[in-house]
Length: 271
Image (cartoon, rainbow, N blue to C red):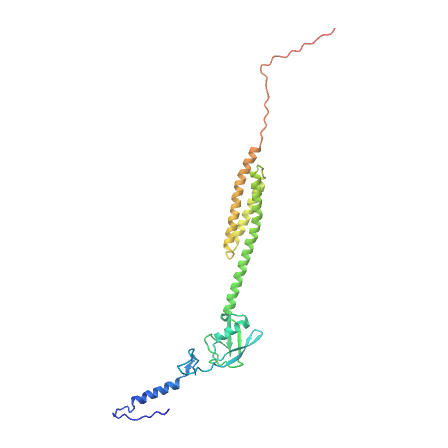
């Protein structure tokens, strides 16, 4: 559009009318429309607006798709993605192919790691471009720590489970002894003391289990052991009383005759 410029009839020093200045500004705006500046400083065509652009202006066609070649270890993948997508969007598309979550991926292009907010086209990624995907070292370390912790938890739970099985067996023996003593049958004291010793050993084992395990199960088993030991202490006293009642003392009382009459024997003589 040609802009006609003339001097003002008022004879001002500027020599340009306000109408001419407004027309020049409008032309500049029209020329700049459809362009944007990327974070890298590159001026590129503006991306499509979600609302379809200005009223009465049809939206531009979507940007073309490109297919990029991605290397992940020994595997090779070819992924279709928008030419104006970000590397973060590319990582989402690669998650199903590589099995890595986007946060665990590290994408390298032309020897440089690329951030999630960087655009493919701004970095020079084109159709058939080659990229390298690897697992983020921080993610590797995090997963290693998680695996170590999971292994510790599993080992602690196994130890608690083993103690629980042994306590079950000992608890059955405690119940059996309780029934015997309640029925009036005495039990060897060594049997009670042996059970107490075994239960105390399992209590020590529970104390040595790391805190990584299931603390609720650990506390439950510790209370079971304590309850069994207390029951055996009571049974030990009851068993001792039962033995005292069963003991029978036999005494012999000799009858003495202090004032017994003297015994005389008469002998008969035969001629």
